[in-house]
Structures are given as C-alpha cells and as structure tokens.
View 1 (tube, rainbow, N blue to C red):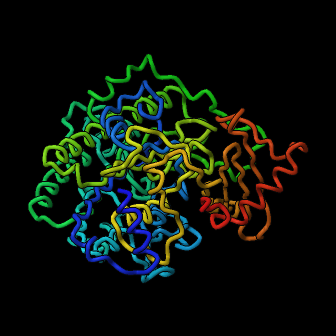
View 2 (view 1 turned 60 degrees about the horizontal axis):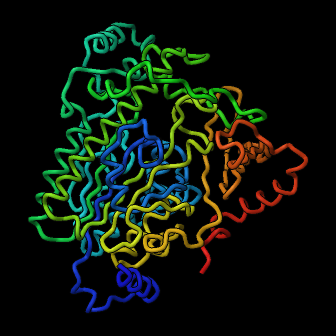
View 3 (view 1 turned 180 degrees about the vertical axis):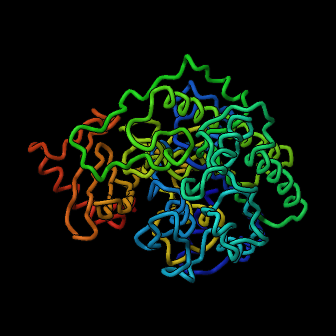
Length: 495
C-alpha cells in the first residue's frame, strides 16, 4: 500500500503514469452508501444496536470516529462527495437541484474519473440522489445504465397501511396530501427481498459475479436506502428491539440559547400519515420511530452482510478497497428535532469505515477529522489515479497506516434553511474543532447575522447549552469566527 500511496503522489504531482505501475493489478473499489445512517452502531460503541456486519467490516479496516458531512441532507451531501467539491462550489443546497447544471456542467465525478482511467463503473441503488422527476444516476459517470429498484420510500405491506393510502386516494384532489404516504413505520411479516434494499443486495451479488468474470478493475457503487423514512422492514428486525427497551432522547428539547434558524418544523416526518401537522411528536409515536429506525439499521446491516459474504466467496477481498459511509447524521428527537437538515453534531457526524489491501491500521479507530469531500482524493490516491484540479478535499490515505498522526484541525458543514412563511432563507455555516462546535446563521436576503451557536463538545457533547453569548467566551468566538471564515483552506493537515 505504501507503494500505491507514494506512486499516487507522483502521479498527481506530475500527471504521468509509470509503466511498471501499469503492470500491477489495480484494486477494485466497493463503494457502499447507507442513507440516513448515523454512527449509532455497535462498532461505534452503541452495543445495544445489532450491526454484526458493519462491525465485522470495522474489525477488518479503519473506523473514523470524527467524520463529517458537508451538509446534512442527501442531495447536497452526495453531490459534494461525488464531485469532490464543497456546496459553495457545487451551488447545490437542496434536494431539487442536481449536479452539472448550471454551475458545474463539465465536472468530473468520482465514478466518472475511475471510468476515464480504465475502470468499469456500476451504480446499484442510491448513489447520487434520486428524485421522482429525475430517476437514475449521472449517466456519464457509469459504464452501464444505473440500476435502481423502484421507489424506495414507499414500502408498506400491511393491510392497515395500504388501506390508509387507499382512503387518501378517495379524498377530493384538493384535500389530498402532495405525496400519498402511510404512517412512518411498519413491521410486516415479509421476507427481506420484497424490500428495495433486499433487491439491491441480490443485484450486488449478481453484479460482483459478473464483474469478476469480466476481469477489469471495477468501481461498484451499492446504495442502500434504509434507515431512511419510512421505517418499514420485516417484523424479525423489530423483534430485536423489544418495545420495553426503547427510551426517548434524554435531550428532547431545544438547546438553551439556540437561535431560531437552528431548527425546523420536522416537516419531512410530518409528510407521513398519522403524524401531527404541528406541535410535538407524541411520545408513543416517538418511541415507535426510534424502534423502527433501529430495526431498519439492523435490516440494512443484514443486506450488507450478504454482499460482503459474496466478496469473500469470490476471492475479491485481497484486491478490493471497501468503503462504507453514511451521507449525514440523524435526529431521533435530540435537540427537539426529527430527521436531518441541521448543523448540530448529531446531524453532521457520519459513520465512515475503510478497508484496503495492505493497510496497517487494521481494526483500529482514528480520531482524526475527516470529511466526506475527502473521499474522492483518497480513493483516487489509493488506486494510483491522478487527482483532478477541482478537488476541495484532502486524501486521508496516510491515516490508513498511521491513524494517530497529526491531521486536520477542523471539519466544516453548512445548511441552507429554506424560506418559510414570514421567514427568509438562512445559511448556517459550522466548524467543528477538537473541543468546540461553532455555527453562524445569516439572513441571506438582508445579508446580516441571524444567530451564533457555540457548544462545548467536551463538557456538553449533547449540545444542550449555547454558550456563544457568555462574555467569558468572547475571545474564543472571535477566534472560531476567524477559523470559519478562513474555511477548509485554512485547516489543511500539516505537511
């Protein structure tokens, strides 16, 4: 691996390829995305979560304890990762705008770069963000048409759920919700494979077999959609988490002193049937949501296990880099919030695990700050590919041999809060340092400040009290504001 890393640096610096390197078998890449997965899994210390397959992968690779997304919403996060550019460059701040137009028409995406360098690239499931208006991934990025199983967020099977949707359809059009959805959770007496993620696992197994026979180095993206809402999966996964063991978030309240733009109305959750349109989420519903999220985490872990087993059965492990990531964190009532779309720690911190042939830090954890935008240069470097000039991340390949080496002093996230009745859009920008999370909110219409947050991650890791207004922290706020303004270019690892 040291040879790969050293040579990749030469390639990226001089834009050449050594003929001796060309004779080496280039590693495959298995690129595993899990939607809405927060790092509440066994290998991250949540021993009450049953995630044996993710835990197994962590034991074979390197787990990053402090990995962060660039924006806590699917489309923005994924397009940043897949372009290697931060949201201010992509100019994608929501789920309604897509890569290439109008800002970056000629951007070379991560899979496209591998394709251009001779890899066979395949997309299964959710890699780029999908919408009902624009199904399918970025076509130029893949060697064959992307495969996607149906509409993943409509996976109800019980009669009660189906009747609920049928009754909505009977309403006059003007009274129907924009999207016809049953309640946000369901335990059904169904096999794994009737769900989209079960079908994705089957397709991944078939594709691995085909790619091995093909013999070319491959980049295979496998995107699972659970634990995205609705929290629907087979009953057996719900039974792993008895109702009596589920407790509400201990900090199910707004942090003291936090500004209004830090929050939202839980509108994604409220788009599902039976969820109140306003007000608090009822406690019994909240407990079912938490239980359902955990059940779906174990369900998707089982689908991952099927894919990993096939990698091993085919003898691909010795020459395949496996990287597993979540696109953002998730609130389950913490900070009074449900779902994503905030700049809090629980929403910006993500699971990230990498297993690469020849790495030294097998089974270890790293507390180095890494960001999802770093994944593009990392995978390119590990595979000996040149690094496109567009990249705004830093390869964390050196950490695979030395996970405790000095690294970045900070990670950066942002979220554009869309306008709502009587309120303008707010841009929130956040920096996470070793001890602090500092966030600034700006009214983008007036271009003026709309609130500041400061949380002590050492004494207050749940972020229950905003201490930005404490006079004792005035110098610290000024310092962190300067670091935030300097941005990622001011927070590079030491040479």
